[in-house]
Image (cartoon, rainbow, N blue to C red; front, side, top):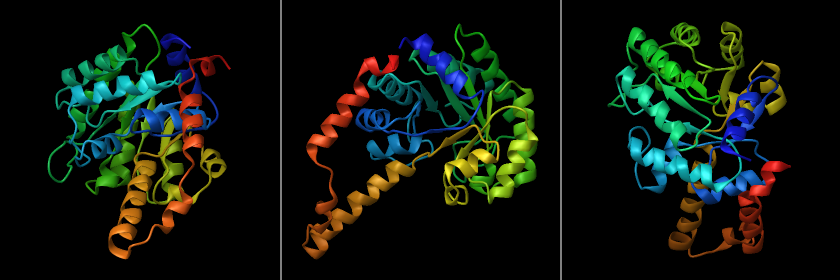
Length: 281
């Protein structure tokens, strides 16, 4: 599947129905997710930062994120979108440049948060937050193939504003040209439904907190078009590292190894996920 085909496929995935987009953090996890049936992939800034021994939120530079995204694009035949935090810039022009660079490395979309990458994770002032999305959208519209720009209102998750402000922001982001709206970690199913009904463009939901208590069909029934998992799978993997190493070093047992996948099964999934012919299925 050519990059142009991937971009078109990714755009079309958002136009009807609901799909789950897993978030790999390296080429191996990307290939496993592709082999297991993912329709598209999204990078995870936290998951990638963990592989570098760094914390989430501002732990990765734009160049590092772009290089990583290019590897994710090369890993499988699937469309990939980038988790690009605040666009790696405070000013609108810098965010627009990030969108242009995202396409250069083969991404079919990216997400931009309204969070300043400083202590406390404060939100950008409303007008600047909107201008940043407007600039990103203008850059995306100049690209030759479709590019799904996801505008995130992260203040509810970060505890810096309430749902009323989140709704105000995503409505403004929609008017500014965003293709997909996203309020991570809403408090309950009613809040998610409110997000969906407050805008006309597709909505992404994060499978965490209250939302993770629902099934995919239940989330889809609310009108959500895309369900992402963020760093959840990466953090499950890190939990397995913590628990198994504690068992070895503290308790002197290897009981958890009984649940390990066989090397042959891992090899088979990696090969299947990398198979470029899968793009023509």
